[in-house]
Image (tube, rainbow, N blue to C red; front, side, top):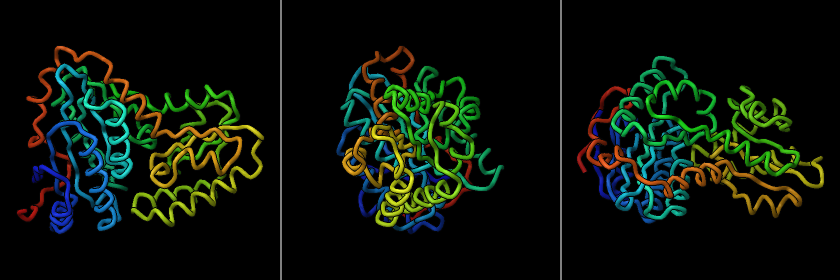
Length: 319
C-alpha cells in the first residue's frame, strides 16, 4: 500500500489521487497541528474527491495525525463509512476543542459485499489502532458501524470503542418527547435505535428505502438531489406528528444535506437531535481530560508509513 505524505489538501492533491491507476489503493497521510483551517481544507478535499469518484469504496484512504497543544489528551477516530461526514465531524470537533485535543483520523473506506474484504479491512484498522497508546479513546464516526460495535471492539482491543449511539439515544430520550428516527437502511433493518430508544417512531420499509437512497446521494456528493429527497421523506414522515415531538437524525450523511436549525424552522414544534452534533460534542469533551502517561509517546509511535487497509497495492503518480 503506497503512502502519499502531504502538507496540504489542495487541488493538486485531488488531481494526483484521482488520477492514480486505482485511487482506492492509496493512503494519503498528513501530520501537523490540529487547526480549524486544516479541517476546512480537508473537508473541501473530500467534497472534490466525491465529485470525481462517486463510489466511496473506490476513493483513497486518509490517515491524519493532528497534534494538540502540549499535555493535551488524544483520540482515535475510525471513519471511512462516510468520508464526507467524517470531515464534517472533524471540523466540528476541532471547532469545539480548538487546539486542546490531539486527533488521529483513519478514514479508510471499507469494501462492500465481500466478507473477506471486510475482514482484511478490520485487520488493517486493528494494525493501525495498535500504533496508538492502549488508553487512547476510540470512536466510530458512523451510526451504521455501530451495528457491528462488538466486532469493532474485538478488533480494536485493547482500545475501548465508545458507544456513540448510546449517547445519541440518551440525548433523544432526555427530551421526554415522542421521537421520530431517520437512519440508514442497515440500522433500520437491525433495529439499532429501536433497541437503544424504546418507543422510537421509525420509517416503514418503503420510506426506509427512500432514506437510504438519500444517503447514497449524499455519499456521492449529489447534495441537491439528496436534499430534495430527504425533505420529501421528512414531509411524509412528519405529516401526522403530534404538536411537540423530537426528530433524531441518525445518519451523519443527512447532516451534510441540511442542518438542525433549518429543520426546526420548517417543522414547527419539532426538536431536532443530529447524531453528528452529539458525536462531535462527546468527542470534543475529551479535550478537558489530562493526557495520560502513555499518550505522551503518541506522536512518536503513530507512524503513518506503517498503516495498511487490507487492500492490495498500487502506485500513485509522483506529485
